[in-house]
Each structure stands twice: as C-alpha cells, then as structure tokens.
Length: 421
Image 1 (cartoon, rainbow, N blue to C red):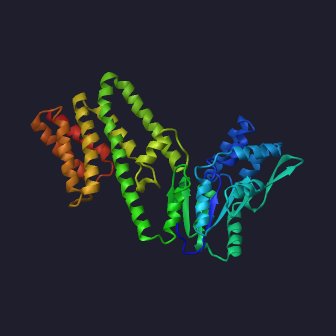
Image 2: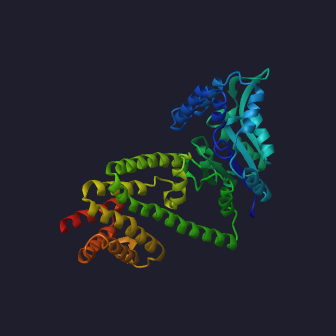
Image 3: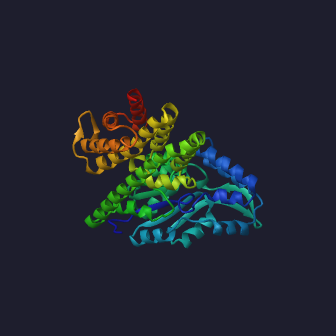
C-alpha cells in the first residue's frame, strides 16, 4: 500500500468497526423491552422519520440508571468486524491519518477504542454520568445531524488538508453528509441510501476489503492494477458458475412435484418470500441467515446497488410452468430454463464476440450454446423432430431483447410445445 500524499480516512463505528449498533447492544443488556424499543426507534431513524438527536435521547433515556462499570463491560463485549486493528495499522503505515467518529457511542469509549485500534483519534457523543450511573442525558455536536460535518472540518484545519483528501467509510444515512463532501466514499455493509451514492462498496465481515479501494485512490502501480484485474475476472467467473448452479437446481423441481405437487409449490413460494426478505436485508447492510451468504456469492457487480430480481423471476417461471402446463410440457420448459439459459449466459459472457443485430446484449455464440443445450434437454422427453423445432423456438425467445427471460422462455416454450403435442 503506497501513498502519494497524506489523506484523512474517517471510519464510522456502528456497523463498520462494530458488527452491529452499540445502541442495540446497550438496550439488549437493559432488557428485552428496551431492546425492542431501540429496534423500533432505529427503524424509524433509517426511514428518516426520526432525526439522530431524538433517536439518541430516547434510547439513552431508556437506559437511565445503568452503572458506568456496566457501560464499560458492554463496550468491551461488543464484537468488532474481522481485522479492524490490522486494517487501521496498514493505513497508518501508508502515512494516512485515521479518525473514528460515532454518533451513537459515548466519547469516553471512543477515546479508548481509538487507542485500542491505534487510530489517530476517536470522537463520540457526550453521555452524562453522575455518581457512577448514567443519567440518560446526552449532548455534544455529534448528537446532531450536522455534527459530523463540523467535526471533520475542524480536523481538516488541524491537518491543513481539504475535503479532496478525505475518504469516508460508513454504512448509514447519518454519514451521507460527510460522504457526499468527501473525495471518496466507501459503503461498508451499507444501507440502501448509502449503497446508491457511495463510490465503492464493500460487504462482509472483513474490514480489510476497504484497503483495495484506498489503494485505488493512492495511484497504484501497474502490478497492483493487474492483480486487481485478475481478482475481478476470477470473481466474475466464480459468480457466474455459482449463479448458474442455483439456476440448474430448478431441475429437481419437476421430480419433487411428481412426489408432492402442492408441497413443492408451497416450498417454492416460501423460498421466494424468504429471498425477498434477504434482498431487503442485503440492501440495508443486514445479514440474513444462509440466504445472504448465497446471494453475496452470486450477485453480479451491477446488482450490488440494486435488487437482484433474477431468482424471483426464475421461481416465477418455474411455478407458472407447473401451474399452467401438463407434467410433460413443464418438465421440458423447466429443463430448458435450468440448463440452456445457464449455458447461453456462460458462453455468451466469456466467449461471445458476434452480437445479435436486434439485441446487442446477446451473442451468436451464446444463442448457439442455448440451442444445442435446449435440444439435448428436450429430446429426453419428446421426439427428435419436435425437440429440434421446440429448441429453435425457445432459442429465438431467449435472444429477444426482453428483460425477464426467466419468465418468457418457459411460458413461450410451453405454449408452443402445447400446440404440437
């Protein structure tokens, strides 16, 4: 990691350094009812119904009477993301200055956190403690929405730099003001408003991921750029194979439907609903058990800032095939959707050179791969001549400039096949 000149790297703490929000940790240790209230208040804040000061006032009022020693105990038990200290140390070694700023963590704890992680400084809100007990009163500039901007401007004057020398790593809407002013913004497990506007996105439980983006802003060498490109290509290949692996799993649906038709439909609908919840969670920096991990491994770069709807349309295409067509037709359409569409995507994405005149997003090589695979799937169930014709029709449907081909391929193929048999 090289440095052309000194930069100010600002880390939010809740959701970036800490795996979750310190307010929620505090509330959990004050009882289930306080925790549920804090969750509700955080939700209202996330949709801009509450401002940050009102959120803090209400949460800290609910923990009034908490012992100072318990406050420190909760703080030391708060789980951090992986390699937080190592990441900050590498940034320090590059000659940059690290500041950690929180509008939820008390200032006395932030000072300690900065020392623990070897950051240049740490700032938080003022929490009143009297005779060893929290009074529920909060204050300080960081307890207000404009507080982070004012604090960063003071740091800029201290270090004689400008906003063009600032990199902000944040996750929620309370960081948007400084992220928009900074030269570079990195969303780490970010909420949707931040995800839309951040220059770079990093997801997961390892803070070292942000180092790649800081490197990009540090005028990397040719070797560093080449290594980054190789990682991106390797990631693209892996994503597509994992993605199409999920696609191919739909081959098992007709088998399950043959055993228990209604139960299969219910399972498909339930999985779709869970996926919708998982995607909402992903776009808001929340980890959803199992599904979030699968989605993160399969999502394309273009989908990191928006809803990945392909699994929903895939499920819808499979369900409609089961509901609308006889068992034989459904088996053919689902097999073509699962295998031929997957093969066309892989061949077209990595080897496609000749663009289809009426749809420049698709390639001739991909369409040929689709046709061959579709025929191999269809001929298992239907006569050779019928399979050749149906595969051609399905191939034409797949090549059309229609966005939701996970639906149009099975419906169009099924309707045509139904006329032939």
